[in-house]
Image 1 (tube, rainbow, N blue to C red):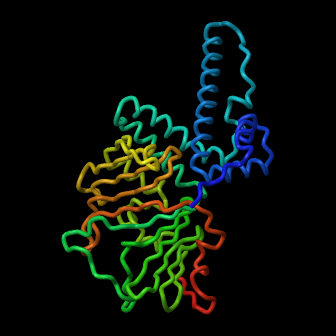
Image 2 (cartoon, helix red, strand yellow):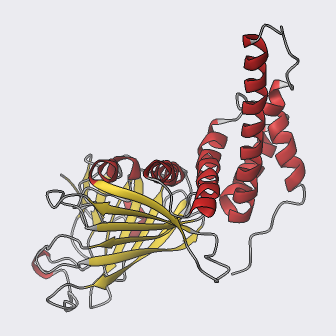
Image 3 (cartoon, rainbow, N blue to C red):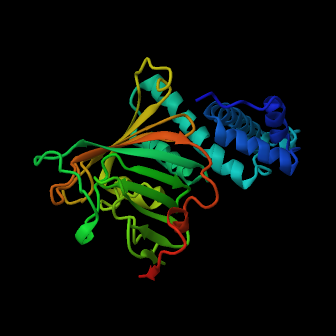
Length: 336
């Protein structure tokens, strides 16, 4: 796959953004470029961090002058140093990058970060997950448990459902997902949510729909342990409460991963139902590339550890998260 092409006037768009001079069309072009190209997102986050620091420095000097009775000081034009004119999408896209970059500076100088830096990084991973960017993860079981790998579920007879090993998880924002699992006979069992209703599309029979958005999220990794990676802001509250948090660099010579960092959460007490350990490898924009759940609770011979790996980010289209994208119009619909 070829690398995303940066807009020819990328630097001009960036400069004019901070001046508050972009038209709505130019703002959309810049937004699309940030969502499409991680390199642009990193550059933009770094630029935003610089402006944020400049603003803080100017304001601090102004306060200092006032406190010493030196009268008014001339401030840099507000459009150039404040974030008051940053659009809503800009805040969402850049807040993750800025704070994560600050955390990176800390850990690069001092080694593994403190719990407070890890909390900041976690918040920004959550911010990044809320963005309306379509992400595709592949699920892989890394520890099948003491019973070993379970045989494939051949079909959906008697209400049986396939396992998650090899499944694909598609996520948009914090409330839309599609999980595609495959039976041994090659047919698919698809569950999802379009932000308004939850739904399930089995190979045969009626389509099941519900106003309960979590009704068909049960099979999504982490959901049963109250760590849903569809709704990170809700799920990661548990990490803050019940886990010890750490942030560390990834010492990797691979050019694709050498700028990643790893967030680690280790369970404090056995009373918490979640996995013993959660690891998240993420880049400077806060995008989670790998999510590993280790030491999952025993569950009828289920997996003990599994890994979600980011395959790609791309626009999946308007109908991808709607159930009728996965079946013909003749299938009956049953509300639950």
